[in-house]
Amino acid sequence: MIYDIQCLHDNDSPQRVNEFINYLETIKGKSANTLDAYKIDLNLFFRFIKIYKGFIKDKNIEFEDIKIDDIDDSVIKALTLSDLYAFISFTEKYRHNNARTRARKVATLKSFFKFLHSKIRIINDNPALELETPKVSSRQPIYLTLDESLALLNSLDKNNKNYYRDYCILTLFLNCGMRVSELCGIDTTKIKGDTLSIIGKGNKERTVYLNESCKKSINDYLNVRDNTKVPFEEKDALFISSMNRRISKRSVEILVKKYIKAANIDNAEIYTPHKLRHTAATLMYKYGNADIRSLQQILGHNNVSTTQIYTHVDNEQLRETIQSNPLAKLK
Image (cartoon, rainbow, N blue to C red; front, side):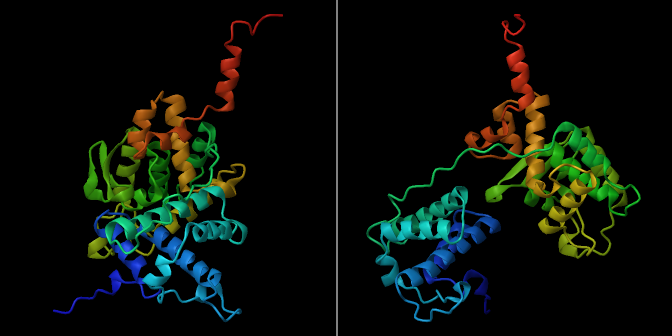
């Protein structure tokens, strides 16, 4: 039997990058999105290296057209910490990457060179060992207020053929705080009463508990959901697109933006499905008295420090806190 192993090897990437990606997939169980991010970062890095080291003679070649599949071990072994910092500087000055994006690229390089040094042992010294991560300033998450969330749900046209599907999607986002990839991956077979099993980051399965609004919106949608034209391998998909396939992340992003705009919410263009995840976490923290550990479990965070960005105190709470000072009423 001849096996199709093309999927294991990207002809555009250096051999060692392919080996690293395969390791992350088969041993570490990283998701497809994570693998793509690593590959994009490393391909960018090696295209930069070919320019930086003077390997490119054609000055008119487009950056994305630079071949890197010929990068061999001799090139990799010659790389230094200074080369890595030069790349990070390049991403800031010429690619206009912010600190958070540069920090991700540093994490990619650290992981890649650790693999080369500790796992397959093709380098004696790890140049990324002392590579420092750019300082990332904490930022307040963007979210909808309670009134804006209600306005969003009320903005849907009940005469639209996709009303029940789209209402269900928005309801799950606003109540459960799931990621868009998690929502798109929901299967009907994973819904059991008031629980739902979803696949999160790193292909980890977790249980989401459904409140009354979620259960009702799912049941209302299931009553009109038609999967008769859906391919057999996708018949269990909860959310079905107009093309009779499992709904895509891009389709969900488009419909969220459409309804945000229809709800006449200020700065509508900045809202994405991930901002609805922020919203769910904020509403649970503010109105549900959810503690940080509970939020961590609900949101599927490995580290509680990630959850802390959702537990910000808004201006209303600050105002109430100031007014609660026993000296506030003195005249």
